[in-house]
Picture 1 (tube, one colour):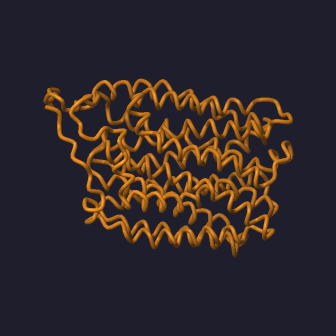
Picture 2: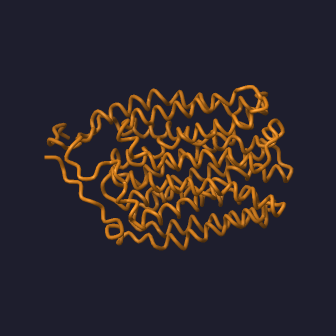
Length: 419
């Protein structure tokens, strides 16, 4: 392949596909451990801090909400800072948020925990808003499988957080240290991220002039009803993930399970998420219409949440696998679905960022809703049934994602090439 490009065109990135794949995996693995670690440690945290369930829900609610707000701001921030600076600075925020959890316990420990969760959420926001657009640009012929790898790495990182943090406590660490250890893999991934994104940024820098629609101009997307349909659907679906991460470990600890046992169940669920997130986009790549696989993933969620509500002790491991497969596959398919709607990487990335932004804000409310339902009813049954109902609602909305209508419903402005 010749390295000569036309004036104003984007040059092929000088980075090997295997190194780009490794970069995506190592960066993405660090985006969920801080979120999944507190659930299995919930009993120890609540004993040390006096947090009730509604206060504890803020360890999930605040970072998810900030991921959402950050998603709305991501296109403009990425244009101003560049992907390398935005992603690497965000990784440093995640590392700082995790490290600050080592602070000695005191009267303000609960406030500090919530603040560090928020700091990590801000860091995650830009990273997970930047990567889908970068993936579409760097791997244009392999968007679905690459988004599967990205989604699987997200869920795999969640599995590590859920499994290793309670084990670290079992091996003698305090609960603060068991959550703070997740700063280390973030710092380990930082040099590779800086190097890879430097190579990409140098080779794919877009011209400053000649574009009718700047990357940061997302106002036209906000006027499309399809943007809002994607946002609401993604938010309601991801609320199931947020609630599961926050409450499945405390739920089973209420059934007599230990922190390590409940952490292992959450880790198993996350592994099932990762496997499904990897497999479903690959299976769905044969056709641009992803709705059949989307409905299958949502059906698995309905079965899983109903199992938690009605038969929690019957087959908990099998139920966790079914629920995890539904959550992971659905997340990955939504990420692909948003990118499918628009052909240009910058526009598709902006749509994906807006979907994640508003969606995560909506999803952030789900753990609090479940805590409130528990407060009113005295059990988790109503909360799990609520999540099953939300999955059913998303299934109805998903029927509208017919690919033959993408161009008509989006009506993307034209971006002429630079002279």
